[in-house]
Image 1 (spheres, protein in one colour):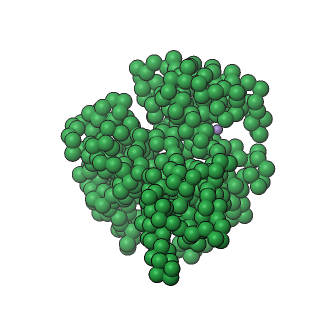
Image 2 (image 1 turned 120 degrees about the vertical axis):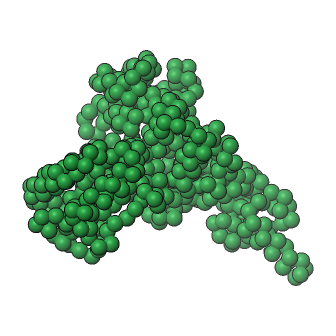
Image 3 (image 1 turned 135 degrees about the vertical axis):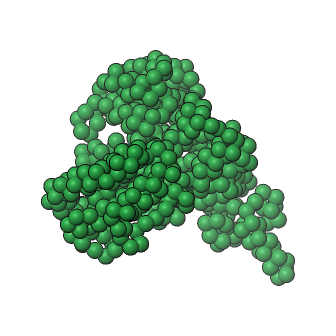
Length: 485
Ligand code: MN
């Protein structure tokens, strides 16, 4: 099993020294000896699966070693100091990050809260590779979720659907996103899932048949033109179909365009050439053509989309893209890592500062946190993924995440929760400890504000409260009281 993992890594990093992987493999399997998963498998099979999932997106070996070790701090007696001694700080930091995320439990169903959660997780971890390990961990847990008790299944599936699947999408990890959605859909709406799954299976035979017909037709038509291309069928996503049915208010039999095909070629010019040929032979369905090459999606997704009608009125949804666009879709943010390891040259031929800026722009857009990042120069040096944030994310005891500027204090937090709480706060607890009102938060802390009816804002609070909201409320209170007094 170790050899399979190393072979998988050597397939994309041929010269990589995998001693570290071997060491992490032995260390982790020893540390988890005698531990079992709910499925009855040894616990270590889980660690190995997570490492394999990550090798699937061609990530660096430090991340894969950390994946093998990702549960040793949480589930065994191994200490961070021991881990640092054996594997150094980079891998230990990755493992500690994953362990920290595991200690949070996402409860909220509101989308705005989910967004705060995603930001919070990144702020806490400061390294996107930690999120990728966590996503792979979650993917493996979802694949084996049937062994858990139903209430636990529901909680984990809800978290996967509302928090991790959108996260995967933001990072451009489409395959992970779809799989997380389908697996969660099965747990959260078992009846709908079953229904759709059965309907799909009934159609599968004729579907395969239509698919073959379409592939043959397209090959026959396109081959004579000497434009390089390969065709691939798009994997189906049951949850995607379900969303489409909801969106279009249609039942499954009415959803026609399920044949998804991809045409992958070498250059942008050839994408348009292939599109022209496709449209010359089959007329496009009205309003289905979208050009995401000239107008990419916010996460830099690029492709031409069109739907055409073939023999027997069978619709095909076709995506046309270059190999590079395809790679970006398959590996998402991980596709950008390879800059770090191999230099940008290998990926795109020429590298100009402008091009790197473009890629970074992409990253910034994907993360949608441009305004929270420090200057671009700093971001450039942080291409190896450490992000710098100027915000902290603090939990209420109910699990709501409050976003605050760096240096924010319990008074700022209290006013962000509710002005009444701000007006009467006299103390704060972070975790189990009492902290002063001028305490500075760290992301991920849980804060409980203590209030008393007869406590009111004082001038002193203005010396440390930093949010505009808190400061204006404090001033207003002081002004009104002076007027009265
Ligand atoms: Mn795990």
